[in-house]
Image (cartoon, rainbow, N blue to C red; front, side):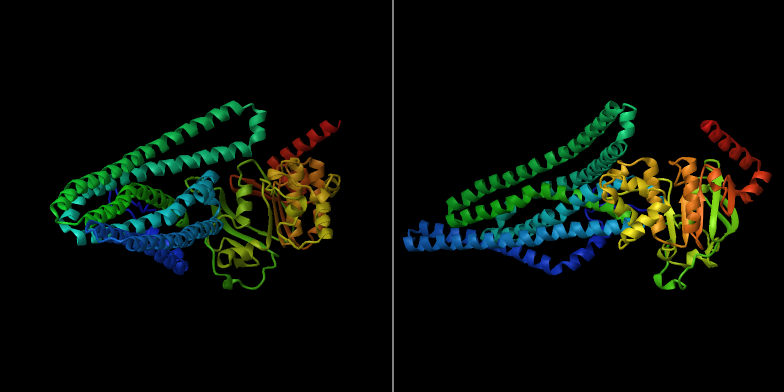
Length: 597
């Protein structure tokens, strides 16, 4: 993927065409607001530019000894009136344009999140949560500043520069040329330093990603860190990242520290030239004292854009760098392609699943994770067992439509899933993954996550089926108990059974449980599976377990090995014909008897 860098290695163009295209819809959406804000900004500039003309008249009148008290009072009143107009218009452009920048930040954040929700697991395996959090916070803030104060300062600087130069040229063209002599040096230095600013700020943002990810990882695994007494090493590691972040920021500050004072130096050099040459012209009578004062006022107005040039360049470089990082994420495409919703062929009953020479490989891996699996799955409980790494979880992820598959290799009710919308397929599947996910909400909320209008009776029914109801009502607040971050207040087995109850509540025709009961004891697992047998009547239930005994009552059991189906049959058939199955079953049951004895 090509990175549309805002600045070339030679210090070329500041803006990237693709980045402008990214922002165009937002500028179009708020065109009226922006137009009104820019109009107020231009009116402020016009009123500011008119003030020196009034001052010129006052000084010229004083120079001719023609000024009267009433005339001077009138000039003062006009200046006060202009000041009031400037204040009112300044409030207007601040409200409109800075408000636009906040709306831009909000809409761009919504667009980014909406796009992230369309990406598949492959993307999230390549990008850390810290990186994504940095994009939605630090990078968006940089874009907001560039779209707010950066835009204001840029437009204001351009308008004030052109208008001030025009008024100065009207007073005396040669003096104007002398005043702008130092400016090419400032333009050249700004262009060269901007390229360095882009590179250095990019490193700052990347380091901020690492800081965010380190903080998230430490807080998310705080119990493990405490259990292994790693508080000191985590603190030291985080400190090193912070120091590197400071070093990168200081490198940016060096460029900014050179650019801003240099802009001021050039501006003061212009003032010095005008003071010397303009003063001589005033003494010689070529220009009036009023002209000199007005020229000096316009030059002072021109000084601000010159001094602000470094600050504006800094804002735009930060914003365009961050926008480029956001743009790269928005250009990401899911490997799992969706189809139009109107291509759904009726309602899937989920009565049958057919795998036809199904194969799947992870990016960069030589050996396939799933290798040429062909089988039909019908309503009832299908158990899947096998060694770690045999492809059980990968198969579950494929069945849940989280990984892409070849055309014709995965069918539901005889229909190729690649011809169906992802939402249509996933709406027929309830999935309980290995890693239990609970929100920092109540138990009721977590169970009813996929069915917000679920009644209390329905929630309690599935909780009983998952053998968790009695434990829930034993809690002080029952189903209203808050589970904490990722369910920290509950045991692993409780979290898994709540996740199972959540899946059962959906009443979907296909349920996939990927080792979702590993944290409960073998007897409880077997009890849950048996209770599910009646609850899941006429549904297809696929249960992955590393323990064989709880699957003994399943209609069929599949033994997987190296991504293939090594054996398939009932418990009795596999025990008699498959040495791996018989060995594991005997080992696990003998261990349980030993513990009971």
